[in-house]
Length: 253
Image (cartoon, rainbow, N blue to C red; front, side):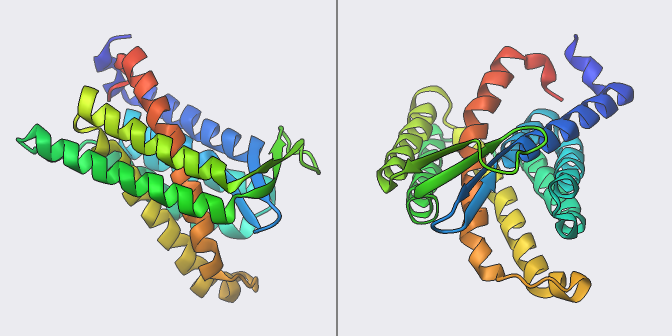
């Protein structure tokens, strides 16, 4: 398939529908709950980020909003669906837009410093949030439709998150210093998109959820949980995107 075929409107519509379906699918079929801290996350963010970076802001926005919004309905969280439609669309659109607006630093040294700084921030944040909110007994639910009880129950010690955070710092730093000095920009775009997601849900839960649907939520308590979901999605999305981009260059939009 020639690279130019991605400018075809029918093909882009098909890709948008497929990606939205994949966002919905991975959101619905894979979820993790930590009873000790009430932390909950899914891997839908990963698919949103990969789609946005590969196919651009329009498809990223559609896949994020429509896919995640539909997942809310299917999982029974219908009262979040209107917000999700907007918030996840903004998230995908921002990541896709910024992914194509990389600044032109003339110095590779500046890019390496930038990439290292971003990697350090992500690794440390993941270690802290993961060890606090995602340690202890973990309940993993996999399936379409989701089963009524978790499929797998296991334990994650805080040391797991410390090690994972260290590996992420090492991975991003080595990639930036050895292979691609600008690598940090990809992570930065996902951090910005994720920050919009976190802020969007905080505002919705704090100001609109109860007036619209009569449902109370402790919005501030969800902030670290949503940050954790964003970081985990980012960590998975980075290598997935690089592998797909290397092996499927025709997906460049």
